[in-house]
Image (cartoon, rainbow, N blue to C red; front, side, top):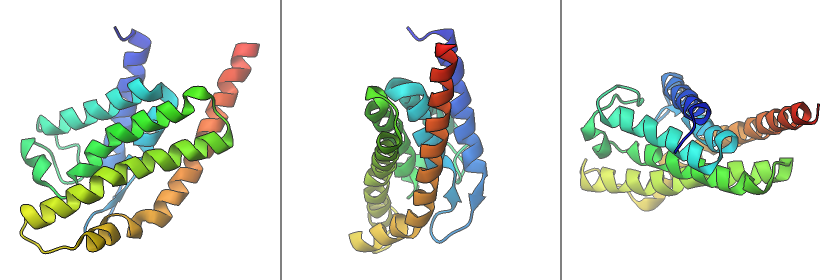
Length: 181
């Protein structure tokens, strides 16, 4: 059973992910958002289970019709080319939390951010490719999906990853410092 403290943190990270959808910069086929940042942050701060719950709740809220996704919301969202990234947020949070389970150090935090963000794209790009070809009847090679759905976003993801490492290491050092005093 999840404790009230953790439920509150999960809700907060879900809300931050919603805010991450609202901050969008139009860019090619999909906008640039802060969602990948908050998906990784949720796993890094809440652990694998807590982070996955936060991102799963985000997805569930959107599937219920609340327009929290960059393209809106509702059950038909699964047919959107970018919905795979939302599914990937859950895997990202779980991955980040799992990697940081053994402790937080800059190198481990960098690995967690890289693995977590990579998890998003490992689901998002194939989903984009499948929906483009199978639902939207747009001929797209997998290489094209890889370029449009990953490569163009890579510089921004590197910046988000660096910010994640900095923030997570600072937060964890303050937590350890507070426990010692």
